[in-house]
Length: 373
Image (cartoon, rainbow, N blue to C red; front, side):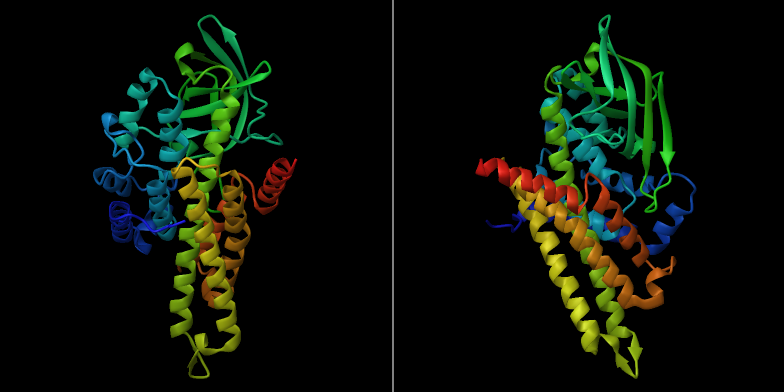
């Protein structure tokens, strides 16, 4: 397998890197975080829109670039490196990609141009308390020419910013996915205060009525759609983690080269070097496993096992990397005025999103057992 990007792919990712490096300074991030609203920088979002990066997975006929999963995960790695306050994963992977894959012509025409222009944010509400994502407790029943939804969703990424949410719901013995507008009657949103400050919401659906045109795919296709979304979201989270870990390691390397004790840079101390070397190995493993999962998805190959491996590394390896980074920084590592704290918090947030190490290893074990049967 050759994980090297083509020249065109590398150019797109380099463009993202330049924009994010230019506009994600410590001062800009602090200003966004002190604004009192969701962790979102509309000025940076506009820059990404102007560069065509927000609509990178949207087909050209709807105003996008028509690129694939490998390109968006490469861009998301750069988002992780800069801890950029933009809902690119949500808009692209949780919103645009399911609409492209499963939406009908009317749904694509109604939503994809707005997503490509950055005017519309669509996300997916996959998580419920104590439920598997493809076995939701939320219910749907037919009423007239539409549907009525009842239930709750938690930890909805970009929930405070979303214009619409893809909501899986049980429909008899089947599962269906519905496109629900954020302002519809009966939908109550509670914005969550996350440790990492990433914008998330909990939604309660009480007699939410949607039209027949809200159904994504057909009424028996929901489990397939949910698993399709979850696979790509999990791989995309692993790419984000790779960027977070790379930058945390870089900050640590720079710090240990300049911080001195006994008139020597602490990077020259054996214990520091060993800890940093372990973090480097972990970082390479996080990045390579995430690339493998993204490449297999991009190429249309089976990727369930590889994605579980990537997320397990992102969770367990990522936690080790940012702990080592904070440890090697000493007291500076916990200073909120120093950038490292964002990487620590973001890595721990990614670790638990859509399942941590133990959940991923259980999934991997089930896949191995199924192949052996």
